[in-house]
Length: 51
Image (cartoon, rainbow, N blue to C red; front, side, top):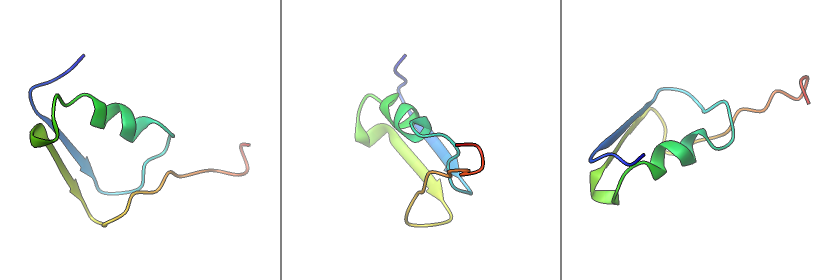
């Protein structure tokens, strides 16, 4: 499902691969996408103990 506007608040790194992609892909255009983050880069968190 697409949305007219998408806003992401990312105070910490993302847990699952694909979470960010899915959220970003919901916006119809980059002009309708707003991202608030505490850092300039996003990292996927990987728990090696689980792998």
